[in-house]
Amino acid sequence: MLTAIASFLLLLAVQQPPPGQGEFVPISQLPPGDRLPAAPLLIAAYAFVWVALLVYLWSIWRRITKVEAEMHALERRSTSGSRPR
Amino acid sequence: MRRIFTPLTIVVAIMFACSPILIAGAPYESTMGLIQKIFYYHVPSWFAMFTGVFTCGIASIVYLFRGRPDADRVAASAAEIAVVFGLIGLVTGPMWARKAWGVWWQWDAKLTMALLVEMIFVGYLLVRKYGGPGSDKLAAAVAIFGMANVPFVYESVNIWRTVHPKTSVVPELARTAPGMAGPFWFCVLAFMLLFALLLTARIDLERRRAALDALYLAEED
View 1 (cartoon, rainbow over the protein chains, first blue to last red):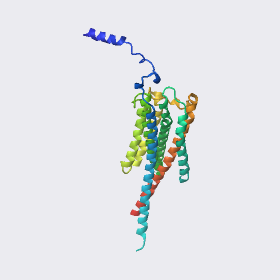
View 2 (cartoon, helix red, strand yellow):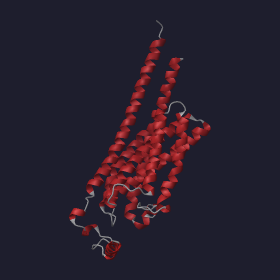
View 3 (tube, chains in turn cyan, purple):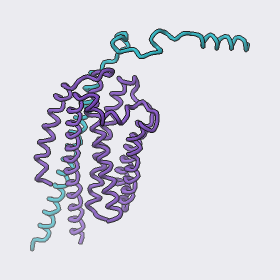
View 4 (tube, one colour):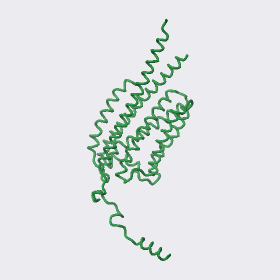
């Protein structure tokens, strides 16, 4: 049993790695199925940046508008409340 | 503040409109190719995030020790903007990593610490929104803690063995890749001006909210 395990481990140790696994392989030499296209990721990244910034700008504008509306309503209420009857 | 807002908006809009042209004209990186062009938005977004963190941290120190309400408004504004830019960095980075490293995410020192700083400032915003009375001072302490983490995030690639590129890439860009330096620093300037623009707008919101609160209090009296 121990001999079998030792033989198996020795066999694993002396096995050579498949060609190209032990060194850097340029993308141009990879089979087409192993290549991940960069363009969709690049476009998605830039699109996310633009959308996130525009959404955030819009959210600031929306909050400012809401506060301004509340202030005008409060000022109108104060003015109408102080008018002599 | 309002006088610079409109010209600043125009300048930022023009810079961001021109940035894709400059980025497209920049040379390709030799090993990563097209995907490396995420660099021109990814790194400046982190510059802006760290600027937001330091702005928040310093304003929080002023607020804690001097009690100035305008410093608190700056801190709250800067924290929110830091979270937005941090989110941009944390989304664009994995998109780059998926192609460059073959994985969306690695739990290495740089990425993990960057995520932690983002979470600290999300925590800052949650404390401010839901913390009730006194939460502004508690949040200020959180901001100081978050700011103290940033040097570790920056130096983590130099201290620990990480998969992320080292900090020497940017300072040596003009020497190692002169064609990339121009578009890169252009984008950095665009992001910094955008940060200033967003901070201006956000502080204006905080100032208006404070005025509204004062009006409500005056009405009660």
